[in-house]
Length: 301
Length: 301
View 1 (tube, rainbow over the protein chains, first blue to last red):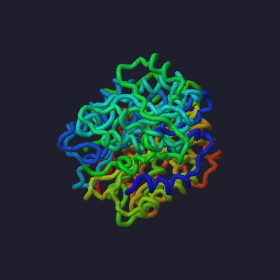
View 2 (cartoon, rainbow over the protein chains, first blue to last red):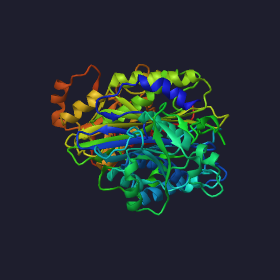
View 3 (cartoon, rainbow over the protein chains, first blue to last red):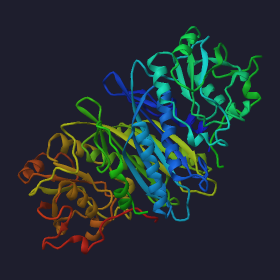
């Protein structure tokens, strides 16, 4: 199943009510509640032996990953995460797996102040053993704060939080901290003019930012903040970094560096330039997607 | 997996923020938005060969069932359904299955005025073929309209819409109409003092209404509105009726019958009485759950 191609086929046909401020195609949907605050909503899944190795990953960590993936989407909109609903399909005969999963989810929800307010359990047919968990996250963001993928203009800097690459090998994809506080800071301060979280790989997610903002991007591969032992190719293509990628007005760079209150890195890795929207170019204006795999879609591991 | 037992184990441990007006344990969660309207949220799943027969049920009908199950939960709270998010895990190699599923969902969403505003697609590991779809429904209800499972008092009548039993054999579980308009009518008019939708079988769902309202229920089995060819045992235990079961003040019966604007049945099938909360008694005060299976949980078909 080619997710991107399929979605391009079906999404344009969906009718959206005027109350849908922002529909499919960003990290979250944003829904108009008739007040100055928008409701953010997103859903994400974890599937056994696709998003984690069933024989190596504890249910507690799987549950935490599922919630944190969704929190990262709220962070990318500059929002505050509030409520979550869980759907879990399993035929794991061990109640211990389930109670451990739920305990991991409970602890992670408490850590981030999320109320797990609803859910559904279903059985899988006998003989099917891969659990499927899906979690819907709901949050709130002020209309004048929300960060969309669109909004970058020519000359803006492309900035990234933290480090990139080798997420799976280092178990960063399980242990990461969603950048909720950084997302709020970048949204409330107005520094982020467009934002996305890196879940499917820098190249693919930067392309999305470029397309939504109708800009090309010149990327400085030598500037990429690499996770220990990661290569530039991994930083560009691996995915599951759950870092924030955002557009910053060039003349705000010094202010942001001075005001940055977090202990993780903040790096300028490129610039929005004129060109075909979504093209990612290197310093010689060669298309980077020609030399590196163009991003990451989850397949069986 | 025993859903009810497991949930009883984990749900009490979940911390709910004060903004959670109503947490797990009713048809929807209700979330306080700081206005006079509450956000309703629920999630439900369909699993191939559990909730439908994969070799007999078109993807369009599966998708419509998934949305309508969720709409039935909004109806049971007296709410207005507005937005939905879909998570789908599949390794069906045929894009046709997926596009047909989405088309069915689109048409059903348009019919009921729902905006499908977000979603996620995931692959299942190779060799696993049962699709898992989960859908989160979001809706709105005025705080002074919301119908909870609690609220029935001794002497109230137990009322049901439509007909019961043999839902699977008759394909009612695919073709049903969620009782959105009836739910709104019963909530806005104030007729329904407590309400639930019948998804897991009359006996089990009536028990839930009784427990939440701290009442026993005397049920008149002879009065059950049976679907064609259905037995009383099927009406009591089968589930997937997606009808509304609600408490009505006895002295409002005539008014409700007079004002009832719908062309489907409305039947009094019992009465809330003093006794052990959740007990369902027959006309001889014998516990009905001794003679009939006590409700329905989805298992592989």
